[in-house]
Image (cartoon, rainbow, N blue to C red; front, top):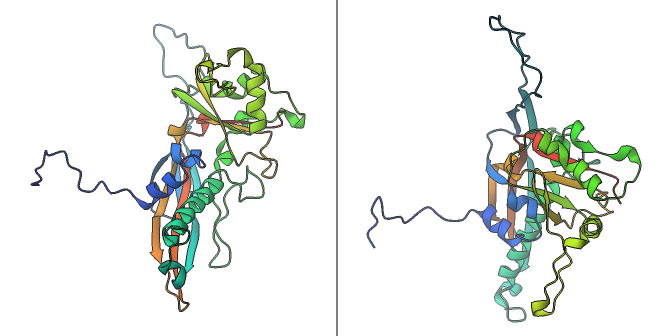
Length: 306
């Protein structure tokens, strides 16, 4: 086939290793799969955020001078790049023999890609930090590993519905209280994505039970509420495997506009051979990247719901 300029054939459309890693964790790493991606140029990545001021009275005389000069609202926000690596190893014998009729190296590479995706997702939520709201930790020579700040760190204080430490029943009113700041801050996203635990999804099902659809056609009942329609847009409810008591997220909700968040890499995801003197094959998934939140007012969270 002869390629011409307008042939429509994309010669360079080869999927990146990160795309392949994301595919392995497509249902297990929803945050990584829904947010944007890109690249950065430094181990400390910074970006500028801005916001629209609140509306106010603006009645003017027919002839009037220049009003008060507004203060600058732009803010510099930063995060560090974090190295994530996962190794896969099989013996030379394993490589030569199909285990239970399956190529063992291929199997281990698929499993390693999933583990790599899960570790990236874990860092995006900031679960490697002592507290989910912690800022980043910068690297120190080769003695302290850099830890990036997770998404909770960038939720504005005014968008954190913490119920003052007093557990609150999750009903429709409480649900709307968490989401409301997105609308008040001119959020214009189509569908808001809300992450929660299976426990809180159950509570959402309970207050929305009158709207649950029964699929009698194939003798099944769908009891899940997947999307809640509100006055300011639809909210997609996504139960997440990381929102557990072990991660201190069982009673937490996080809602966001995915277009305001991206995972950006300093060193794009690579799959490389690791030199070894052992009679084994070792391969390594390696990524150095960071979380960027272009509009932190596109994030809200709530704690202490039951």
